[in-house]
Length: 125
Image (cartoon, rainbow, N blue to C red):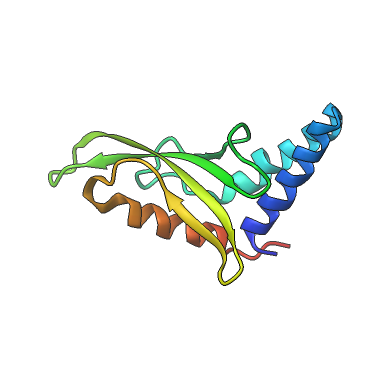
């Protein structure tokens, strides 16, 4: 099962338990997302603060991930951060669509898209 499908299933279970006020079951699904699935998200190589699933803004038909990219200049010095949300929505044709929010400094959105696509396409047991 692809990583993006595992996120969708775990979040749907978390959301269901949350709506029924079942905190112990919610915690189990939250732990799966935070400790297992988030390991597959981009980290390092510019994603110096890592990436994380956003429980509060996600819905069962829209998953949101928070990330930031640490930019460097041509001399290798860090010059600042850009902050982004990676928004995953279902697609009948492609399985899912990705949209990257935030400033597209140095065409960074293409790189973020590639990194997240790669992490979502990992087949996991």
